[in-house]
Amino acid sequence: MAVLRSKPKKYSWIGKILLVLLLATAAALFTTQHHELALQYSGLQQVSQHNQEYLQSAFERSLKTFAVLSTIKVGLSIVEGSTIGVGFGLQVGDVVQAAYDYVDIAWKTVLAGGIILLALQYLLAMAEAAAPWLLSITFALLSLTVICRWLAPHSAALGRIMHAVSAFMVVLSISMALILPLSVTGASMLSSHITAPSLNSAQGVFDTIEQDLFRDSAEEKSIWSRWNDTRERLNKVSVYLEQKTGELVTSGMMLMAAYLFDCIVFPLLLFFLLLWFTRAVTSAFLP
Image 1 (tube, rainbow, N blue to C red):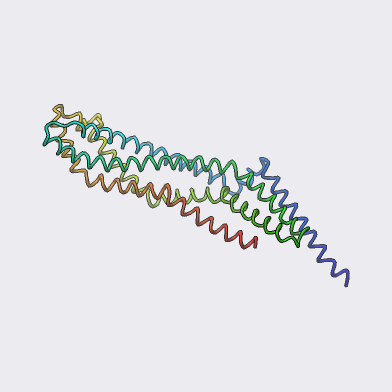
Image 2: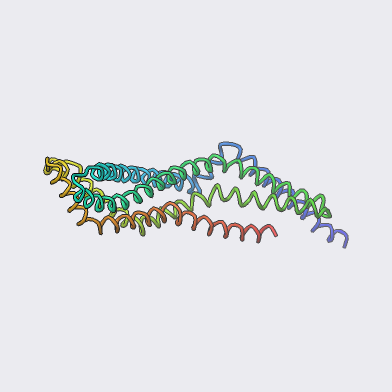
């Protein structure tokens, strides 16, 4: 009977020793270059490459849109400041001011979106550099937690401290290594299916307005270059802006909504959903 009772205790000690060794090995592995093989086979390197390409492409698109809107904004400022006569000047100023306001809001939106996209690139680079060390610290803390529960099972205060620190590090390391990259990847997929058509449509409208007003082409001169008389030039610009006001408003709203979802709503929504799931799983495995 004594032999039968000693076997579970012996096996329990062996299991705990193997668990501690496994966690310590994982902690040591993430301090070396060998963890890159695990990332490669898990597909995280492909996710990282996809995120870099998506963010760079989105940032370059925002720069292009920003340049177009800047040209329109500067041109409208010049037109607004060019007045001939009190009555005529007020008429042109009213039309140009309304168009200028729409363009200015879109300009600020694209500027903020470009900054957020660039910040996301920096944040992903930081997370990629910090994730191996965070995972190493997390596995080391889990190993120490097992040792503390094994050697000091009656120390409730020490057990609570180790449990809280370990749970926090598990969530933090998974957030840096998995949740953040996957949220950006998911946002890129949602963007390609939901907001990309709106962005392309708005970009096309602003490109057309810039070309019609201020950019000469090989086939046709712009409205600004076509007329030498200042009064006639301002009159044509005023008529053109009156015709394009509806498109300006619609395109500006589409642009603002698309950048709001691409840069803020999609990434944050996916990040917090995955974070909630991670915390729920952590609480289940680290009760």
